[in-house]
Image (cartoon, rainbow, N blue to C red; front, top):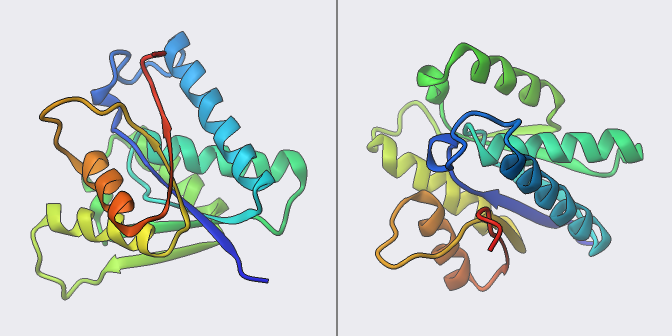
Length: 176
């Protein structure tokens, strides 16, 4: 039986109106929608999940997979962390670094997408990470609301997933 893989994309905390306040009811609701999307994915036969390891949605999704595995005692569910490049977390706060370490420790595998000898610009390395996740998945769960003129990594990843023809699950964050 082929393993079905799902990856995630979404914004960093500063992109949301609540910024870093995860107790904000809007953030709590969004995390609930993420957990529901993961439950649906598991119901649809997905057992491998790839998260990008950035602060915000990436970490929330990874933590939701970890919580699902623990709650349902599912050793057949795996979490893969797609690391864009070494030292990518150098600009993380101490709290974000500690959170990332917990996610790394709880993950089942880690993939370094851009090795040290890759001299590409940092932004390109993030895009390579996003492409890796989509190229190795059949579904993308993205916290994303399309807006005219929108740019950024999540938009790029959603567009890339559309071109790749993988299933797309969009989770709105504004409650619309």
